[in-house]
Length: 147
Image (cartoon, rainbow, N blue to C red; front, side, top):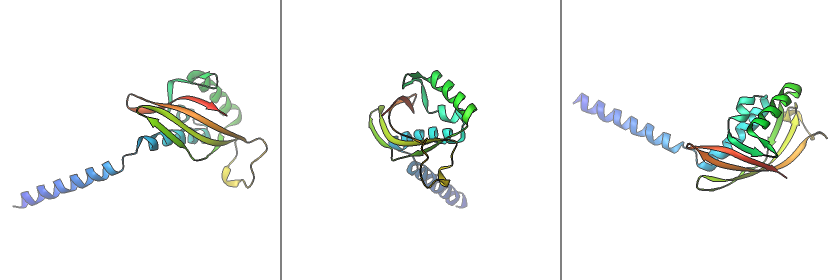
């Protein structure tokens, strides 16, 4: 009898754990937003691997391939350090395994946004439209245009 009760209790715990894990699953839109936040976090810390990981190897944007962007950011991080980013709301529009994400970004070289009351003159305020696509089940950024 004790074994039956223990087995039922174990099954109940496993079922509850399974349901809680299912409830924590991110939607596709949330996954895309998280990719964009990862790029920003990488820029904030001058972590090239973190910045580039969400991008597709087939990425092309603003006249740069994946390799071109990698080289540009490598030089940027080495010469000037982190790029502080402040992200606006991220609008995601998906259709199956592809879509777009649009957002406004304020970028500043090497500044802590928490210490700012006014944006410095050399801050860049850019509107981005990103192309996203699923590759092997994972969302990746495949293109970028800025306005």
